[in-house]
Image (cartoon, rainbow, N blue to C red; front, side, top):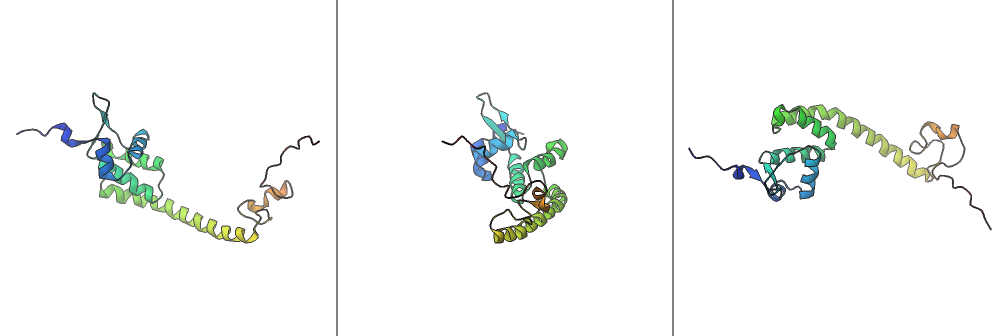
Length: 157
């Protein structure tokens, strides 16, 4: 039985970019961060195995829901023999990430609510401003606005 040449199982960076929708620079970045890997030809050109398509899709989907690249890299590294993530892997990982995302959503909701209050005050220096002065910590040390650092007074003519 004839064997399929290795080159048919590999993609150039341009082909991977076109098929995945990720920019070439993003693919280089993903590779530098250990999210995907390639081999180099004798001419020092990158060649990606076809499973890199699924890994790139996995990375981009995780990024879209706000998962940091470091967390994605850790998840991919946990896969046996760094195999391509499958549907079961995504289900397991997304369930684990759900609580982290729920917590972030809750934090963003609180930030949004406080931001509205802050916009109402206008100056960001009130004692009760939870954004610039949570729990009036600054008021315990000094009075007045702490948003602008004091400049040393220059000699005046």
